[in-house]
Image (cartoon, rainbow, N blue to C red; front, side, top):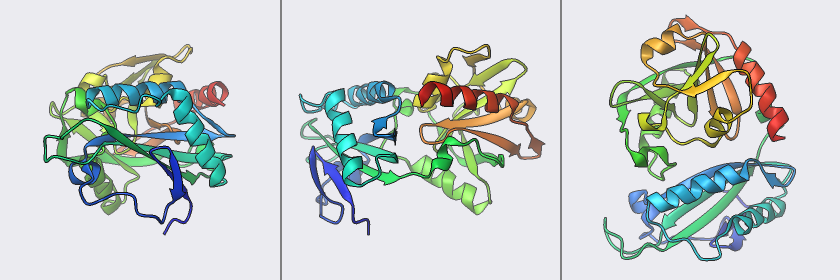
Length: 279
């Protein structure tokens, strides 16, 4: 059992203390969203993008946050929590937001509650993976291409099943396709491929999560041509490089997809640019 401290609706308490009742809507229906953030030297990296995505998700789900729930308020709670758990040097933080209990599928109200947790991270998260990832496609589920597909929903079953598939087949990760048979994203990452001097990642309309690292890279000032472009399985097979991105690890390069192997020259360049820009 985790014996640290968590923050529930702005109050700090032991992780071992009960929080929810059996009527919690996040537990019952996955009625909520979450945000994963990285804290380094006492500050949340890319905090503006995280808060922007959180508020967009809250709006899509018609959740009503407390009136005092500002960016400064949230970041102050995150910082305090990391200090209380002595992980402010480098930590993973998860913010879960869910509708307050009441009702069946149709809620009785839209009031939101929130929970913040944190865990220590190893400094290796700042390093580009030495050994490339081995990935494949999870064949048993397809992501829909609609606006709810872009949020980090509390309902993560497709990603859970894809993660189990990857483990059972001794893979490092698995990709999910959308209903058109094109690439959406990976279990906890966005997908990029390199073709010549172009770097592609699926548009949000392809069913991928609106990743913070994805958004940051697309706006990065670089001579590389990063753009949104649909990605087919054939594109994966014929790519020069494939890499995955998320908030915690930044960039991880892929060495193998099925019978195809890849290098990491562009991934290395972007990784170095990212470290200089963010830290």
